[in-house]
Length: 399
Image (tube, rainbow, N blue to C red; front, side):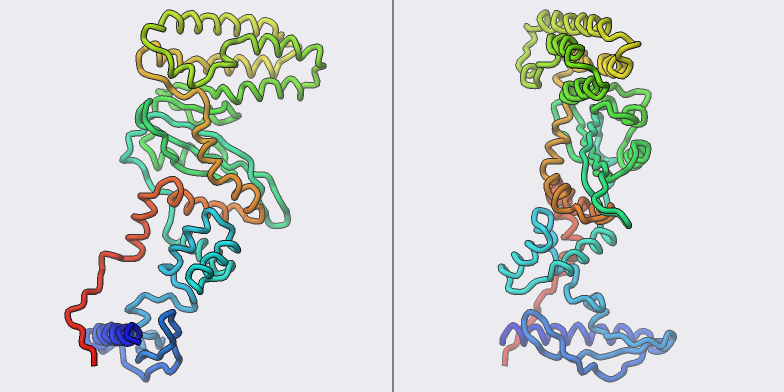
């Protein structure tokens, strides 16, 4: 009862202030009309504050002064500010499960349909990929995975979900930059150029997919191919090429005889300055085995496989150059982006298969802040909830 009475008085004062602001300062435009008799149902109880209607003489429209003062969106049962907890949970849970969980905790909450609309509207209206030009990123890593989407007239269409991470230093942490759904590498390059200081980029880490390096590499960037992808993709090319097992096995043995195929990131981190002669011998041995391997892959018999190995070989030993120059140990795989995918891939692949591209992008904008950048999530809600405009009690009288 006490809280209900306090709330009534607060709303009454705010309404009177709004009426004075409209009719007192601009009486030629706004005029006061009768009060609205409809009840307002809040979580604190159902009551009817003095909801006074004003008329805009120029447009002939009627509106409630209190609604304008509180910035209440019309025809919305749940305002955006009330969906903070629900939107945060929607990143890890389905909309149905999240709606049930919210009602279990708070005894009241939006339905799955209301929550879905709230998430989409909040992401479209207020949330976008933040600009990161103030970060001095020098190292860029990209990768992709497959997701299933629903388009008009089609069901479960496969699309490419791509992501990018960037770091300021070799030994620094890679930060997630952005996600893209079914976008070509040219569009991704233009987007990155707008959001990052792209001329500062020095090295690109990628799986060597078609169009990736061609669009993302600038004149001053080096390229390091992912080891994990070449182990998988090369043998897939041999199998898809229709070569018999008798032809594939000798090539497989040659590839597996290369020390590069068994090299791991942990092995590089264990190298010390005293191991420099060993690293030089290892690099020369890898180069020799690649040249022998290319001789075994005749261009007439294995055109695709040879082209793939030539491209990989020319961009696979950059990590040796960095280490030998004393710059540190750079990543040899794109597992950092894969790790970021692992936090969202189950939801994006198996739960969101009825979503469209726009719906998935809106959900990713929220997941980007909630999972990967907690500081941006807190900053966003502090701004959205307008917590800098606190209400201060000067006097409280109970009678």
